[in-house]
Length: 284
Ligand code: 13P
Image (cartoon, rainbow, N blue to C red; front, side, top):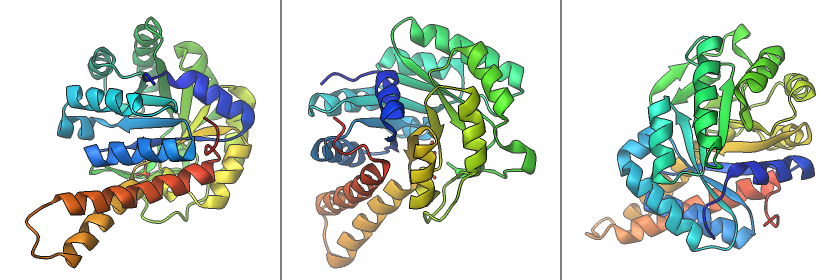
């Protein structure tokens, strides 16, 4: 299939109370692992590149990988820019062929975040591409950047409503105790805050830091209206584990292909487990 916009998929997921994984990828094998598993699970899927990973593979390669991956399967695949840092980057991703954009204006004051998000929405919506915005400050580490979540940094439901009304975003990422880069899925979420946002905002809600959210918290968040979870660390851990094990088993090899294939298999298992937990398996 051709790459598709995220909005109809997320709206369907929200209505039927399941979530779609936004899986961060860094290599060809990770792209293959995500779409092959989506096909096997009959699950819609969001393939995402963040700016560091785009820098690693190149914007044109990232877009081409997404296009080829989508064409290889019959389930819907979205190619999403994760944590777009500015308008220019969003425009470059749009031109390259991404079908969904995130603009992350959380480092800036609310007015500035609203102003730039609005511009990104106007540009993306003109060509049928969806936009995810974010409000509130998450804690944790992503791509070497550490942020601590202070008490007042979680998403304020009233501010979320203002942001959504003024920008026109299609999906909203919220900070409700979720943390980027956790090594184990042990974290809980502020469920009351999710509901308080949901009571004001009827858009698809997104939780970043999906690797660190416990199974029970994932289920409850979905029941309260979260319909996209971003997952990066679990895939990275799987890739490195598969690669390492293969090298340990064949320390004298001069060919990286077996280790890359083992890495791909391990990523597939991580993706499969999350798709089943999110309830997206069988939904495409
Ligand atoms: P994790 O690395 O914690 O899964 O977070 C991924 C993420 O939120 C990407 O935007």
